[in-house]
Image 1 (cartoon, rainbow, N blue to C red):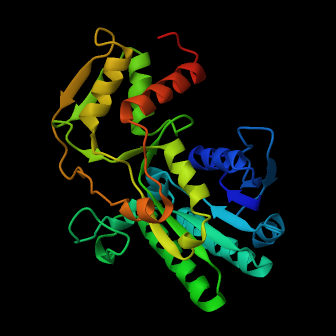
Image 2: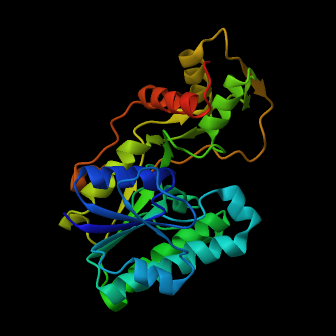
Length: 308
């Protein structure tokens, strides 16, 4: 059993990571700002990551620190670039410095496969694929690249061990309501058609959040020290398949799909390889999309109290 701190442990992904760590019998403390945990059997510190003194105090005694907290809504990052950069970069260095002061065994970072946005490498893209910075594409992506660089700096300069986990596109219970699947579900429950631009061929390798959370526990192994892993979903899921899967779950007679003209510049998606995580950690996403979607639908039915 290890003493573990999880920043952002009250959020969508963080809460599932907390669940997996507790199932593995670790002692967990959540650091989150004005956002209480989803469960009562876990320690909680109301901590602003931009307040270094508070971060330092909250991380005292932590052996492993999972840094998941961030501005993750790309629309919010676009609207508030200064705050996004502050939290995602300065907040990260505050966590790393706390780990250095307290001599933590390792710090784990929630990055994203979107760091490959401008990559010119052939797909599937691996962890060794170089970034192409002029095409990073977004403030959010750039903050994640900068934060990854800080992890390497702290290892090289201060010998702080790290593991970087580059997330694919997670879905599942507790996901943010401004994301595609909840948007479609809300429309379906309200009797509105699910609208798709173009043919709906834009895809993402969606990954069920509970599968992704399990990788965080496996990443504690010695082999994962100072390594980077893609946590990517097992197959390409098009926007059209998302809509049709919801239609199949809720009834074709109740849920309609409408196609709108394609928008110029829609990003089709890129595939990142998860082979390294399979080889080193014996981890892979195993939950089929329809199975995970069914659990997600049940969650939102209950949350929104709908008898649809």
